[in-house]
Image 1 (cartoon, protein in one colour):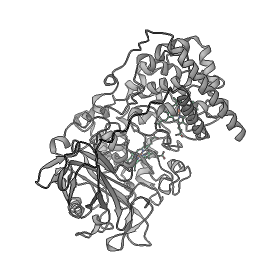
Image 2: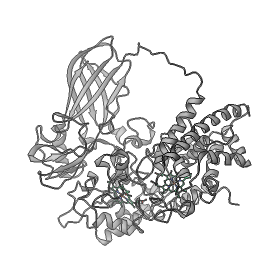
Image 3: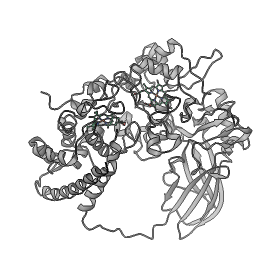
Image 4: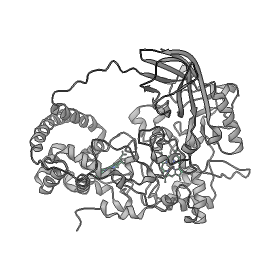
Length: 259
Length: 373
């Protein structure tokens, strides 16, 4: 079909028809008093940032294998800042959906109290009542809306808390095949505290949380994908693999800088 | 082609200005303009949740009806022979039983016409996911030389010559017929197509096992189970749900399997989504369709290569091209060996797929040709 050639015209058409009909464009005054606290998740594979690394870039991992990251998504709950005095300041409603391949990685929050903080906290996973509650109640742009994130089992009920998928090669000359880790069920809710002292004063701040995919496979548990490359948190051997992966996940995330 | 482009561009500019003038005049037309809003909860069942609807194009009785008229009207094509419904037929869930559809002058489309329903839940449209909004999409078939081959200025003139459109554009948008409002009306009608009443939907997510026969139920476990071989090399699951899961029997998140390569060929022939993104990993990936109404939407796949569901199941069981460089990781995560389903397993899977037909949708008079007596 040649229809694609029409798109630019259609776009021009739209643009022009709007432009020409617009009355005086009203400029909104910029509100400088809007102070933001932002969190950016910054994905890596080892030393390399994930974009520009594409899904065809095989990076070496534990045990002489290499791997790509095709999809990496997380549902956070109780996403919060911890104050020096151990109080919790929930970011938004505490839920967030991170998708590294869809570049959904930066989140802005308003109305964060000034003060001294000692780190960021989140869980990968949900409370049981939410996890097994009705997933259709969430607004269409909410992190818990399955139509938005695709992170719901549908069939067996409950959410996927954490999806990590790609291809791997057992050695340089081996053919590639897929791996897929889907964390789910209450047994595999995991929590993360990323320490770093900082003060939130009169200016906006941005916290950068690094996420290193390589750590899933090596620190502290060496994981060989040629032995098993799939876990969806069900079945005994899958559960053992998932536990290993999740204890490694503690070394995946770090709060790098707040500035 | 270049020459054509610039002529077209000039036309576009002219139309844009004309359209603008009309708008201002038309707005004065009718001060008591009040189309009847439709509450989206009347359209979308609570089991599906509320989709992300365009905020600037709310459903109205008049808008949906105008969209329906336009969908069934061949005046949208250059020689007034082809309507949207020529290729998207309700009895086939708005798909086409021909592998490639026939447009004006007997010309064929490049791909199989997909079924149309539950699109309010989709983030991307067309097999190669090249469009994100239905109001933009409708301009493609209307202008494609092998579908309706229409030009927008001519279409606008034509609609203005037809009294019923003058009346119905007025009722829906308080303006004379114009292609922008046409695209909004079509968007409303397309978004209002909801299929929700299959046996599968009654059963999902497994609440009501007694609704299914023993074979259908075994099929449900295969469909919704992971590939996992026992000591006799028999797999417990066939893992269809990752890309065709949930109540909609469709994964709508592009990254979670919503756009994928399911190993049809050793190397992609039609580049699909890869042609749009120009990325190697997207070569030969396509939008994963909903499997609702799958019994009536054949032939299957973007090129209509499979005539029967048995052939589709044989593909997934015995002939997946795991060596395809852009195959979805989920397809090969079990080690990239063929599933080798037994005949019984294939029959069970088929039986389950057959529970997904929604005859109420296929016969829903609200979606039918409004011009028929």
